[in-house]
Figure 1: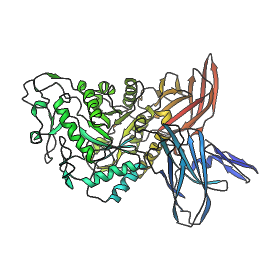
Figure 2: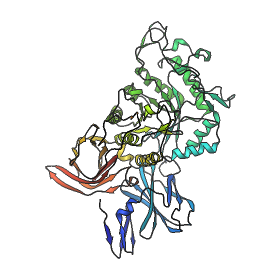
Figure 3: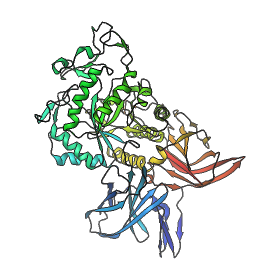
Figure 4: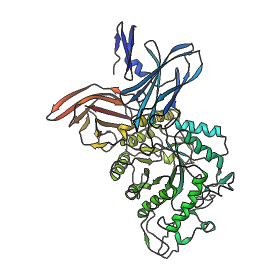
Length: 607
């Protein structure tokens, strides 16, 4: 897009839908939108909580750091927006000495409407000049399960509450509203080493790591202070091999043969406390036993969620009496009984979608699938999985996907590949899903969450802030009652695909009342469409400028067309130029899209 300067005695500066009149000379709208990375004056913008109830008081923190080598006097202007509409704006006068730092606390009363996402745009201005800009987002939702953004905690060392608070504060900046507390327990069949009357200060987990009770407790309480749910992780059917010492009976087990000679199990590395023996989720004695142990854990530690893990397809299995066990058909009964017995939320991992159909019919809060490239290797498989979840639940339950990036490189120290991570998140988020990937150790590279060989470079951290802001701000166009549209999508002179083929722009459209949403995911220049990038060496896709998007609307009148992208201008909506042509009852749009880096979302507002 070329720069356009407006020369006049009277200038109207429109930022985020709000207009201010200035009596001055020249002003560049283009320049003002380019100042979006922050740094000269605004070092950070974030909210005090991950999620808010309707009518809650929202506190936006604006960290200022004057790097101009001179004093600064101006204003901080804050715009609270739902899509392209400004809901409220605020303005504060500021004065900073050179190198001075200051934090502003901006209070905003959340609207009464439930399940809405908002973009918060913060500008430092003086006169008609926009000096700096940085954004954040606000999720106003009375429950977390409609728009879950799941993260994790994997380490519980002997650390101060201040250290734990610092970690939770950092996680909160990504609007993570639920945390899976991975491997916090002592034994799978007996999570606490004692009861509430004789708890020890610390214990060993299955990998013989030290787990400190106060650290687990602090993390839970600190998460709650941010409206972040805490998930108590455990296998639904796992126990140490010496399980009989704790009152577990072999008659409750799952076996590889019909004569109960070989109990099913999962081997773990030498030096760990034990390997895993597997039990029958349908066995009522096992259910009663493990529920009672989990109830003790929930009594001592204020977890909100029972996060149930599984080990995927176990092949042909039998109970102790030699009867065949169809594991997926045991899941719903185990889930529903656990939820009613424990009175908490439930999340259940359907590994490689094994048992997804059965779990979708249960009382889980949302769907959760750990995907592996053996069966689901490509970007398109993410959309397929999210779509399947909505189909199975009549659009009522969201999907969180566990997909471990750069897995082949995570065996030794290194860095995550920003390009493949951004494309994976684009593929998941655009489809209406979420990706469990961020937590206390940074980002997940392996299914064993404490693995932290791969670090996030600063550029990836910044990109993830933008992507999670975007996921919140546009949750109503990404995850809120959308259905696939069959309307034609194409880009003039550019190869496209509807299923994420390599060296194309992957395009598809969804719709809901009042909106049509077109997703553009850039795979141009990519040699394949495999998401995991084991070598952590993907190049960035070939970016494009000045694209012509062709889209056909079959009903409704166009009110406006907008671009929103986590890669451009901090996710701010940009009003696009377009031309319309009538073809019978259909309206064909040619839309001018200024830029495509990794992911663009173009939405059409209809009257």
